[in-house]
Length: 308
Image (cartoon, rainbow, N blue to C red; front, side):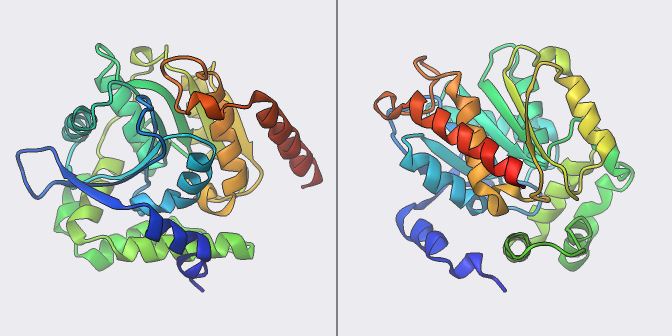
């Protein structure tokens, strides 16, 4: 149990990548936590936004691998915001503070929904250059909890955790996925009542994405074929919303493929970002680019998927 938390990779990550805390709002209690790794010369990095249960370090495997290949990666943990507009305003201020005009965003579940809302919110003065939406959704009504969204702030922490844990896989899973679930449960335990209540409020508050405002943004939709919290209907709705999106399908991975299928996720991220190499929106140090190497990795992925 808890293999990831005591793994050499995770301990190496925690000892080499510092956790920064930044306040950008007038309210001093709203603290953004982030890991910023890779070349600072990159002005359009890849930003990771976690799901309801996640903290910034759930993307440690992406940070270690992608920075090793020359990418600049920022993994965020957002403070307590109670509505999408407030979140978007805070996120915009954070990008201003970091002096980043445009970014690529990888959003997982709620993180994916917030990434779309931010792209929509800033469409007149675009701040999002591309999106990778992992197990993401476009309409909060799929959870059938819009009527309870305004009462989460009243609930005690144990009840909120029970609601979140209800979406975790409960059936038989392979050992790697079991470790990922254990790690996410541990991360969930580290979140306070107000953090959880605000995230569940954002997750369930009546809202949907307006696709006409973000139709020009390159999108990759990443999802899994095995059990996850996302219904088939929700996945189909995403495909309809983004008919031109690239699709990155993982045969397995559950709710947290970035932890338990990190090699595949990292490769799909690279393939998505490849289209921006050689432009001012590249998320990688130009000296590190090797298209030939990426082609070899794509071939390896195809071979491993055929074996599965």
